[in-house]
Every structure is written in structure tokens, then in C-alpha cells.
Length: 80
Image 1: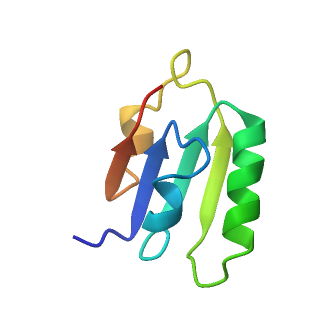
Image 2 (image 1 turned 120 degrees about the vertical axis):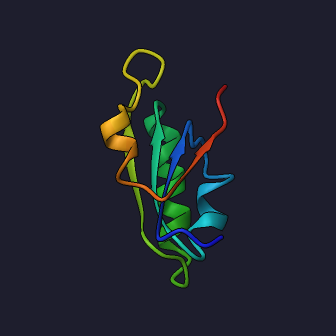
């Protein structure tokens, strides 16, 4: 199934976010700003990918709410 927008929780370097962005807009949450910088750099160098928006966030202390999740058509969870 091809979802219009997908959330990637614990996105890391983009193992799931990058392939998902071939067909969907992706919002990636990750605590490490260094990993998000690498993900943003990789997505920026690949013009055929759809947008990947990122946010640095400690999901264990500040989880994504039900309301926030309702904005997405799909979700990927790859916890540490």
C-alpha cells in the first residue's frame, strides 16, 4: 500500500525513511541531531525522493501523541 505520508519513529540515519520517501512524504523523529543531519544530507543529495521532514526528539521521554500520529497514513517503528 502506498501511503501519502508516513512517520518514522527512531529514524536513525534513515534506514526506513529514505526508501519510504521514494513514494511517500516522510516525517522522521530521532533524538540524535547528528543522525538527522546525515539523513537530511542524504535526502538532499537525492532529488528523486519526496520530502523528508525531521525533528530531534527523545521519544522515550516525549512520545508522539495519538493526535500527532493521526496525521499520517502509516508509521514505522524501529526502537533502539
